[in-house]
Amino acid sequence: MRSRAFLRAEQLGLRWDAPGLMAGVDEAGRGPLAGPVVAAAVILDDLQPIRGLNDSKKLTARTRERLFDEIRAKALCCCIAEATVEEIDQLNILQASLLAMRRAVDGLRLRPHRVQVDGNRLPVLPMPAEAIVQGDATVPAIAAASILAKVHRDRLCMTLHEQHPQYGFDGHKGYPTAAHLAALREHGACEVHRRTFAPVRAVLVPSA
Image 1 (cartoon, rainbow, N blue to C red):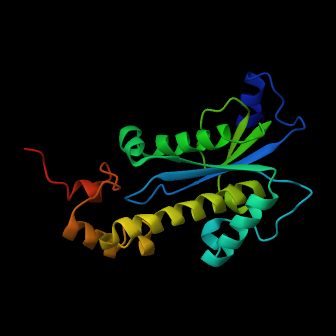
Image 2: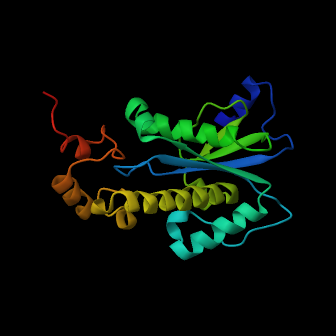
Image 3: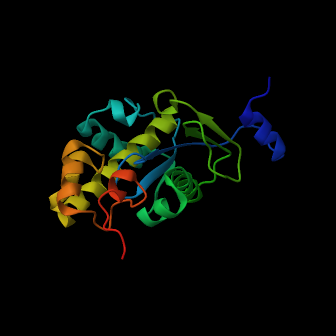
């Protein structure tokens, strides 16, 4: 039986198995209550293998930071992109995540022949693409993308903490922990909170 990726490639008049560059894509930040959602696209260099690539969630922060620099140095090309809090609230988090992924692929210096994306949904792209559930644990390029996206977003959260220390973004990174929810109840929402997310909606003052 033909795969979805094969069928999409056929519809585009392209061969999925033809030689060419492959980009791995992943995102970080779908679950948090605040901040942008971040996506990364990576085309690895087969001549410069990177050891230790894995799902970013399975790595320590120190290992992620080290691999972040190594990926940036050794990959043929990579791109990190975002969808803003405003776009998340306007589009919904799924569509904003797909938008960030498309921006990451569009921003690559080299055009990939095909794309592999972590998860079960695909952004609209001009080349064949395949969604791979748990791809960040099985496909090196997707793992590399997951690391870039995670580290970049964690760094953004450190900046958010400097701007809004009362919420503790340096610790929970925007996720709905007990501490974050307590801070929301005490201080209300700030401009970086996603207003369409239920815990944030709950503390917003109704308009008159």
